[in-house]
Length: 42
Image: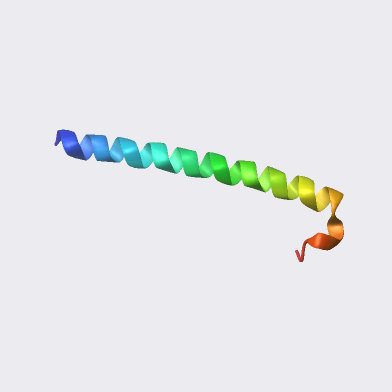
């Protein structure tokens, strides 16, 4: 059972890290889109 709890903790940490990186990239993309409107297809 201890391994399962540890595994869940690692998955949660990875998910938090992934979401944090994702939000950081969205901010970078938003900044790039604001400075270069013609570079984005969206």
